[in-house]
Image 1 (spheres, rainbow over the protein chains, first blue to last red):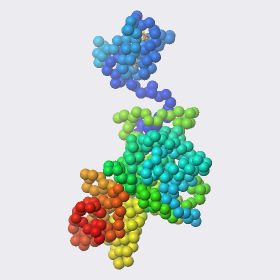
Image 2: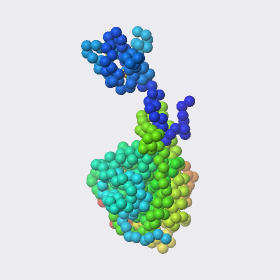
Image 3: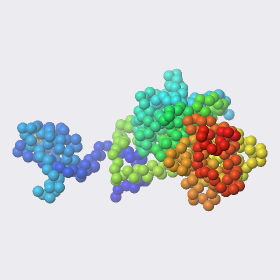
Image 4: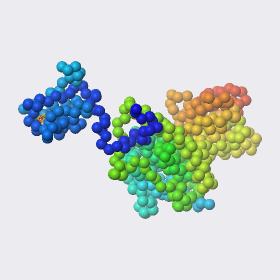
Length: 99
Length: 401
Ligand code: SF4
Ligand code: SF4
């Protein structure tokens, strides 16, 4: 149950630090990044540039995306070096249909 | 008994601020409120207060700095007028929405264009929907008294809203008036210590202010803000009563002048009420049952109390020192009309727009309004619902009497 007006802290103040994790910025995405790990050189540019910390590492290497928070801005795909281009943006609707 | 002094309204307010000793004042000078901060900056320079005074590059920045300082956890004050208040507009709503108990001395002045530095209420009336509590003073004494009360109202835990304490530009702000001051300790004790709820400077408990608030929560926050304004009704009364005990002075929601048996009445804000009282005295001496109702609190508007105060009057003129172009009358008129809508007993109401840009309201003008009210009472007929008075080019007798 979401809180009613009597139970919220006044003035829209957020009392919990670092709680943006709870805000699913991924649900307005229209394009989603997909990574080809065979091409990826693990330069970490996408990881550095992602504004939502949605590029996830496994054992220190770029591995997948956190689709709950990835908003589909496409910065990672642009920043992936021209001679690599390991990230493609595909339509979210198509991805959901499993195409 | 306090000390009797001769001060301008501006210096009276600056004195109240000195006695309260706020943490931060951020301001930008604008006539006629400049003297408030000019005087206060002397107190800062002389080491009479601990206040951090921030001279900003505009009023928008001044209110922004006030908001930042309030978020940090400080007791914050500022002063402005007219275009300055207009430039603060965006930030006024933010101060109220973020529930910061900032207090602002608003020295009322006309809004441009045409450019004019004199007193009318178009500045603060334009801000009436910004979520600020608004209190209007008749004279320097009341401006001083109100200023002291603002912090207690704003900071009350049931309220936590900003308060605008208004006085008329030049007439009150610059004329030297005799008034009684409380001693510093009494004021400081009355104001008490401010405790911020979630100060940013409390680094052990980090919080976020000003986060995005969409369809899912915005309305809940606005509903809570509306409740705070509702709660302020009781707080304003309690604080006024406590202050009266301390000083022997002051009004609650409004002042009634010969209203007990009044058949016709004028409703008017701020300094012009003083002029109306002179006319009431003269007409009462001739046995005419005239009265005056001077609202002190405009936001929250005391609907029930004000409409009760008028329920036995036959005809009333609501006099506005501001217009709301395209509406049926000035802002005060509209409030009273809606306040009285649900009353069984309703006086006949007319509206007079007066005093724009500092235009004088003279004794004969007021007498003419009372005479018109007397005719309305006798005949039940209204010539016109709302009109400008003391303006050249109108047919009515105002200014000619
Ligand atoms: S699309 Fe944008 S949000 Fe999503 S992973 Fe790439 S950079 Fe991050
Ligand atoms: S920018 Fe491209 S190459 Fe570099 S880590 Fe990301 S996906 Fe791999």
